[in-house]
Image (tube, rainbow, N blue to C red; front, side, top):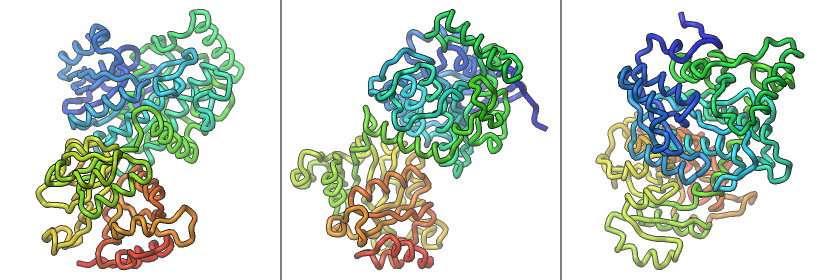
Amino acid sequence: MPRKFNAKSTADQVLSGVDLKGKRFFITGVSSGIGLETARSLVSHGASVVGTLRDIDKSKAITSSVFDAATQGGGSLELIDLDLASLQSVRVCADTLLTNGQQFDAIIANAGVMATPFGRTVDGFEVQFGTNYLGHFALINRIEPLIADNGRLVMLSSQAHRIADVDLDDPNFEQQTYDPFVAYGRSKTATTLFAAEFDKRHRNRGIRAASVMPGNSLTNLPRHFSQEDLQGLFENAGKARAEEGLPPMELKEVAQAAATSVWAAVVADKDEIGGRYLEDCAVAPIDDSPNPFADGVRSYALDASKAEQLWVKSEEMVGTKGTYPMKVIGIIGAGEVGSQIARAAIANGYEVVIANSRGPETLKDLIDELGPSARAATAAGAAEAGDFVVVAVPLKLVNDMPVEQLAGKIVLDTNNYMPWRDGHFPVVDSGEKTVHELRQEQLPNSKVAKAFTHIQASRLFVSSRPAGAPDRHALSVSSNFPEAVELVTRLYDQFGFDTVDNSPLSESWRSGPGQPAWAAHAHQTRAELIANLARARRII
């Protein structure tokens, strides 16, 4: 029977008797406070921890206790630079982890700032929203392929989420007076919503995500408060709880504040905590009383519709600021399909880095035609340069893709299974797998989507129509990753096509050669494509 823990439990008590040898964890913000104690407790039980710091050289002395615990407990600690207030730093950190390629059993998003004076990150975001939420949003989505199947994501939230819901219209306080505590509350509501939406999007891999209220403790998090302000906060909290008949607020020791994080990352039943808000090593009840110092979670912090809206808004913000512009497309394959997609991409404002099998120097004529928004590269170079990548070459049984450079990226696979051209793949012939599932297996750390497979390349311009046109042509997409479907949907729309989601990859055969959707490639509306996909029959 699972042991019960409570507000008094410490991280070490939660992990008592648990052997974490062979388990890997990624923790943001291990230089002090709850993050430092979380890392110490995990490594002391044998875990391998990769922890982030804003300045490794300055923080090595601080983390010496974790290295000592690792030595005694058989675990390990690796440190990596990360400044969540810089999307450039986020990308460098993520790419370093992806290049390493080792998976994590859990990610604990612990780092954060609290009630800062008004300021903006280097990318123009309000500091608390940009650091506590958007930095984590960008980082975790980029390294999501490194979360092992059946892994976990733990987002540190706060009781302060009760102060304010997110403001999707003005997240950066551009149209209203800045309030540091309201801004903090909004950032923590955002992290809670992110956990709920991430859980929904990735539970198909067995990954579950939850948000954690660690409890109030005296760390250096409220360093922007004066001693008088901090004392006043505690007094107000006590009065507000007393007025509601709630027990007095008790400060936790740091070891107790770290307990719910490790409980969620290791001990709790992941399917019971997935998509939930946790406190005191338990799932917290919903409490919509306006008291900002009450226990439990406000329902707006778990609202599914709001979580989805925030995700879309966050993609827009991260995609148009700093270093995350999804505007460079890597293309591997410069034949009819690859070159035509390059033309359409450039016509819609993208930059293109394109490769073929014969070397960049053989693409001079194509690059001259495409103009200054295009350059030639090797396959590895195109994969590395692209914010996402189009693979416009047939699948081969011997994997010839730049796997390392494609790790963490969305890959659009334009291939169709043609045995007369590519030879026979027995698992495809038998119906056991689709050719696109094989591509996903060859690129295990990428997010593969079948796209542009049932339209002649020459028709990308001919069949293009503005949004809302009654005769707008539709194309299908198949993927195991919702974010890949979203990207392809946006790209189709930019190119002038509607989308039909035919996910997952195991269903991608429905638009393959010989099927009704394939036969109608010259033109089919969205309704017609949906009907044609439904009429498909497996050819074995």
